[in-house]
Length: 209
Image 1 (tube, helix red, strand yellow):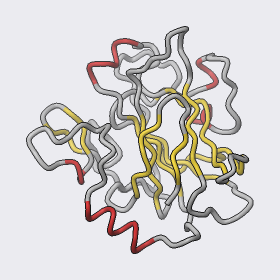
Image 2 (image 1 turned 45 degrees about the vertical axis):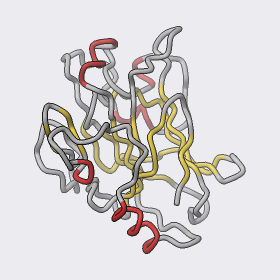
Image 3 (image 1 turned 135 degrees about the horizontal axis):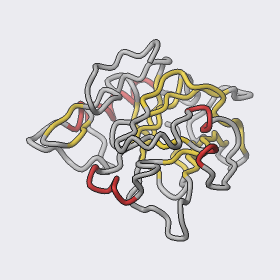
Image 4 (image 1 turned 180 degrees about the vertical axis):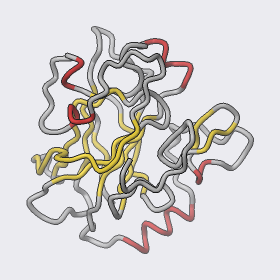
């Protein structure tokens, strides 16, 4: 992980192992910490957002972080965790601006040693949507991540949106998979400096702010 300032932990992406769960530093407030899927934003983080961002958002990189609970990974052991086909940027009107074009850093977990869906390059470019393992990357569970760069045609603005295209592995979507998106000011996956944008499921978009 060249250029990455993460500590070497089983969780990756700056998360800490607390009570058997991977939690972000801001979430580590109790023995187990709150659910990683919580939409709550710590007051200090909200203040940082208000101070740091105006109408135009300075763009560094996007961090897509797996938040799939450990007990859910066995439901899809071959391609465990959040399965990323593509990540896109859109304007407020829904018009596409760019797809992820490069990977600055990554930590792809493979908890069952299957070696399937581990090519980070499969997350770049437009979504292929055919479900073949060669067309997506499985982050592998809580703490797996991709730090992505984009070639957007204009500066990003508040109100632009990020969309993660996750693979539907069967006729029943693997609803246990969860991932979240963070906007990082530089090409470094350091959660103490990145801004949480939201959890993403079912190809839903989250808004830049």
